[in-house]
Length: 213
Ligand SMILES: NC(=O)c1ccc[n+]([C@@H]2O[C@H](COP(=O)([O-])OP(=O)(O)OC[C@H]3O[C@@H](n4cnc5c(N)ncnc54)[C@H](OP(=O)(O)O)[C@@H]3O)[C@@H](O)[C@H]2O)c1
Image 1: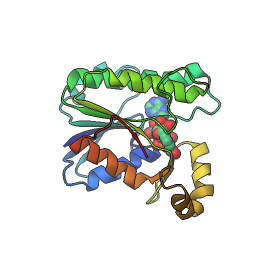
Image 2: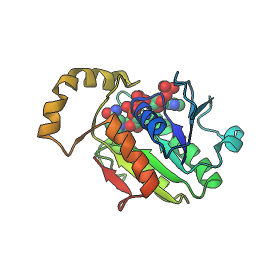
Image 3: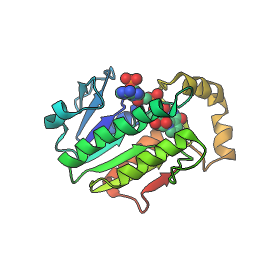
Image 4: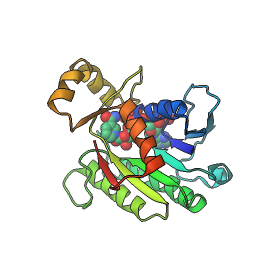
């Protein structure tokens, strides 16, 4: 399986990158980001791209992939709806439209979040924007698309979020993780399990398009 990874420098992206490099069924990983991951591995190739609203110059590089793991995203904290939508919706759709055109046999996996609002009309801004993004992705002509909606994700193996807010949150809650897992097993996962789940769904598919924890 040839995998294209967007957001590989982030917490979830680092997790799925690690699992992809370990998985014998993944032959190649191309990471496209605005910075390098700092990792070296025979399966991994990286492209640095600055304009995430326009991928026309990269099109020749974006062909021939079986799966895309789209892990790019930001926290909505302190952001206007317009700014949040610019990253969450506009960037995602710029990547996804390019990939759908070039890779009709691709499985596209998008990381949204627990509580995403598919009606696009609820009161929570981030949930509406993620819902709008998921709904638009569902209409693109990929072989398959899956929306992953994780809740609490415990970073493992030294992985850290790029988002200060998440980093602080997971530093505080990290020691409590075993307890949280026992008390709320349906709402928690780890970067490792999430990465493995994304790879498994890319290989085998799933019965539902929207996958919760
Ligand atoms: N962490 C959680 O607990 C959690 C839970 C549920 C859902 N989610 C969702 O999962 C997604 C990823 O979360 P995360 O925790 O992995 O985030 P993260 O650690 O902050 O990583 C964000 C990733 O997105 C990239 N990125 C952000 N803005 C960008 C831009 N304007 N242009 C290009 N790249 C950009 C970052 O690249 P740089 O390295 O270049 O900054 C980084 O690779 C988000 O949509 C988040 O809402 C996260």
